[in-house]
Length: 367
Image (cartoon, rainbow, N blue to C red; front, side):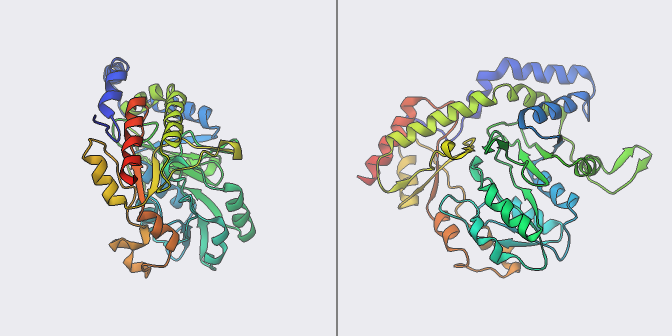
């Protein structure tokens, strides 16, 4: 039995008629940049998330960059964030000239709020929590630290579309937050795409300018910005897929619970369901911590099961991070987790017999 990690072809077959209508409608309109359709998507995302402002961008990475830029983060400033994330988190901080400062994670792979204060210096300007794999951080504890020390919160909520903490959507706890619409996300475009969420009108206005080369009009450029306009075709597809997001997340949550029921070996630690604690996680990925990770991955692949390592290297151990002076052993929890993580096949198209097959083979491997 083949069990792919994700199945974008199947999603296309399921939505083929609607997606082709999106393409046809976009091309027939004859206008492809910053059209009303993009504004419609932005308003619909505001309605879904509760954000006051949403700005469509080229990627979630651009959302991170613009969050930092709009906050005035620059050379000499420090931004605290966890060493478990996609490289874009550190990369965005680096590209605005600031210094990334890592804070270790807890056993849930999310930033350990109890360790943030010890990382704060006179140069610290912001905390950037990462809602990894759609799992919300303890934002109440993080907010307490930020308030005590007068720091901004800029959320890396790239994977948190549809995730909530105590009723508030990811990306809305701080000054701003980004959303990624990459094809592997719960709510995805057909290529790269992203959004910035904020309740701050000044931030929203800055980002709208910056994404369009800083132009108020063709003959009036007020700042030097970049081109980060979300394509209208992506906007049309995202509008359609926003109508299905709750069903997508519900199906993924059902799959996660079935994994929890069927994987019985003590050698595998699965993400805990946290809805009774005020968390609603969107299950972008379902990442287990396992013994003998590489052996298990190869074993599963021999049966046609595609599991992936997300991520096998903590951010501070990448070659690019050497300039900041970190070394192996600096963040032991993150390093240990990175050595054991294995993302299981997890998407809304999985059938129950596929999940049972994956669980059976995992239990079999550990005997």
